[in-house]
Length: 219
Image 1 (cartoon, one colour):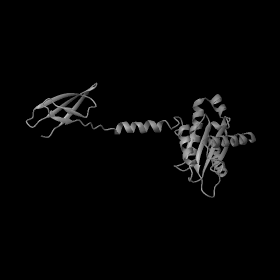
Image 2 (tube, one colour; image 1 turned 90 degrees about the horizontal axis):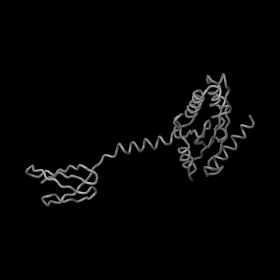
Image 3 (tube, helix red, strand yellow; image 1 turned 180 degrees about the vertical axis):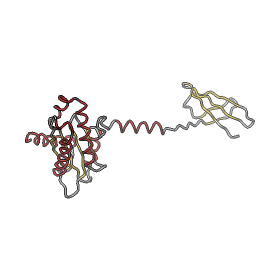
Image 4 (tube, helix red, strand yellow; image 1 turned 45 degrees about the vertical axis):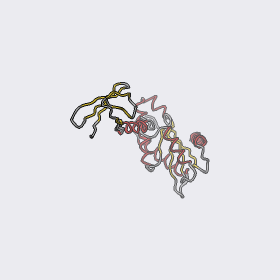
């Protein structure tokens, strides 16, 4: 006869209910995790558990994505940046630029106008950087006022050209920001070419950082 089974889990015990041909209800208690059980009438039955894990997987995906996003600006964080840089550094990949930007005199915004004003500036910078690159490029906030981008290059564009274009776009937004009337904020930039300047992530970040602070000293 066809057998319909319902399992109710109680700690380490599962209760199996089986409907026989005459409609009688037979029960068997088994330890959870044992695949084959024997009912009271002596009939063997294999226990199968079907569990919909979709909500669990969706929650895992959500938490994984959340752990890679800067909560203030919504751009990538340091974890996501490291993953993007590792992918861009892989042999055979198309050329990429690593661009690092740092806001000048940003501390004065927080000190003079409050952290809400500073947060507004950071979000504006994150928005303009996101709009300035392609969807498959990476924009990350890695410090209080420091952003790093991994940007795909075409054959005619160098990393320095991309870095200057991004610096100019950010400066336009900063100059137009309401708080710029009270505390003028600038932006310094440094960059490196993934591949020609190396493929080690830490070395590329160090090189871009050195070039950025060289630019900052010249301002």
